[in-house]
Length: 326
Image (cartoon, rainbow, N blue to C red; front, side, top):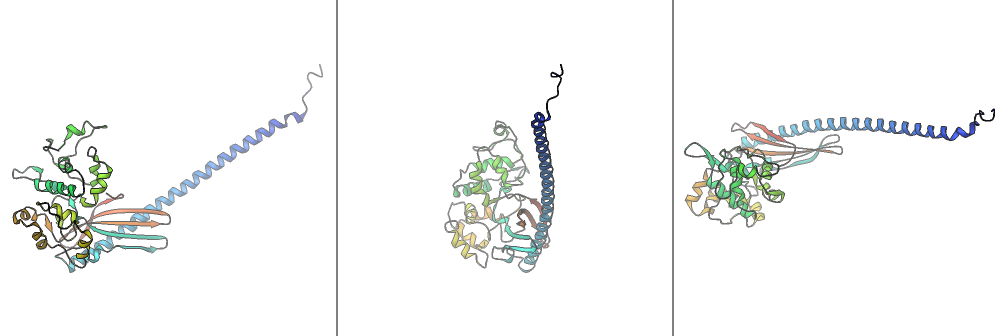
């Protein structure tokens, strides 16, 4: 009886105690690592938020600098804007404070084809596709080796009615068949990335077209002094390639002056009537510019794209900001 109730010697329990100690240490290590990780992530998020706020302030300072440059340009050269002027010269990268770098550049958006010009108010007062603008965009698409049919699709995307244009237009009857289904906005385009919503338009076509189109108010004219050779040739109804054949020569001719002027551009048409149909769309002075500000703080990089409008008085104000390029 004494033998059966005898307690085992202590050395037989050492393995269990050691295992329990190892488990406790492992759990404590995991908890400590999790706490350290959470603290590090909180500090990282705080630093990122601070860098973002600082980047926005630096980009807004770049807007103020761009506004000053555009105001000065308006004072000294009110009649013409071209890429050889001071406003078109990029800045940086320059260190504006310890650890903060800024790179900024201005682009004349009126050197592009305005997609919102595809519609206009007709004689009856209704907003409808503008045949002259649609044909110009079709020629631009052809020059870029993109199917011209997309011009009518874009016009239907903007115009307020629900009747598709013949033969290549599309309205809700097409978009509701997509997966997922959606409707046409029937409103002016605010970003050229809306083109990606067109069925099967795709990224490849967008990357080809994006450098030559923009989304501005409907009345924005094309500045012939800064327009691409493709945009200039797209407006010529005869289909002549006058400016897009040698883009390097066009850039060289523009060094120090506006080229072509409206009078020089008129000569490329040959037919005075065809020029008169597009003359109201042309200008040598711009009021819409896009400022690209890239701010680098340590290893973080921040970009702000600002659409600036210059009033006839010379005052400049931002009317749209975006954190991604079109």
